[in-house]
Length: 166
Length: 166
Image 1: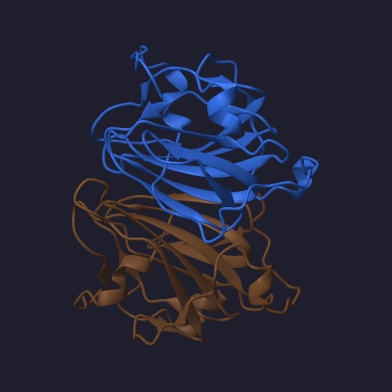
Image 2: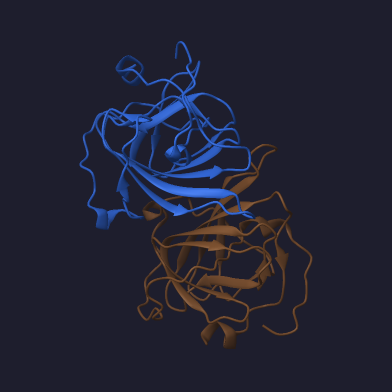
C-alpha cells in the first residue's frame, strides 16, 4: 500500500473486518464455485452494499447484532462475490472474523496476502491497515465481530488489481 | 428458578452464553437428529468439558479467540448433545450467541423457555440469570461471543429436569 490517505469513516464502517492469523493452507483458490442459494447460507444474505469502501464486485450485508451501552460488540454477516474486496482500512479496537462459507483473501500492510477458508477464524490487531474480500474465483462469507468502544473503522485507499492478484 | 445461589466462577465460565431475543418459531423440537460428524461441523468440536456448570449430557468446547488487552472479546464454539444444558448463570457485560447447528433451548429467569434454531442470533442482557443448552431430542452447536471487560460469568444453581422439560 502506498500513499495512505485517510477517508472519512462512513456509515457502513461497522461491517468491515481484518485479521492477523495465518491459515493452515495458503495455496490460492483455483476452483470456481457458484454463490450458494440463500437457503443454503447459515445467515441471511441481507442487503446489497452501495459504498465506495468496497470495490471489484458486489457485497451484501446482514446486521446480526448492534452495539449497545453495555455490550459494545456489533456482529454482521458479509457476503462478497468473487473479486469483491474492501478498501484498505483499520479498526481502533481490532476485530474478529469467522469464515463461514467459500474462500477469501486477507492482507496486512507490509505482509503477503493470505487465503482464508470456511471454518477459519482470524483475530485482527488494532490500528493495522489491511484489506480482505472474496478470492478471485470463489465467493466469501464472513461474520465480523467488532468492538465499538474505541471508535469506528478508518477507511484508506482502494486495493488495486495488482495488489489483489499478487 | 428458586433460591438463587451464587457459585464461584470457574475457569470455563468464558464459554457460556445466554440471550433475550425471541426466535420466530417457538414450537418445541420433536425430531431426533444425530450429532453430525466433526467433518460436517463449521468449527472443530474441541475438547469434552468436565465441569459442574454443565449437566444432563456431554458438552464440547473449542476456544476460537481469546480476549487480549485491546480486544476483550472471547469467542468459542460449544457443542451440546441432546439433553445437555448449562446451570443458571449470568454475564456482567451480556453476551451474543450464534446458533450454528441443531436446535437448543434458552430461558431467562421469570420468562418461558424458548427454542433456538440453526441460523438464529441471540443478544443477551447483562446480569440476567438464564440457562441454555441442546433441545431434548437434538444436539445444539453455538458460537458464544463474550466481552470480558466487566468480569466473568456468575454461576448459579442447576437447571432441574422439570425446568428443562417444561
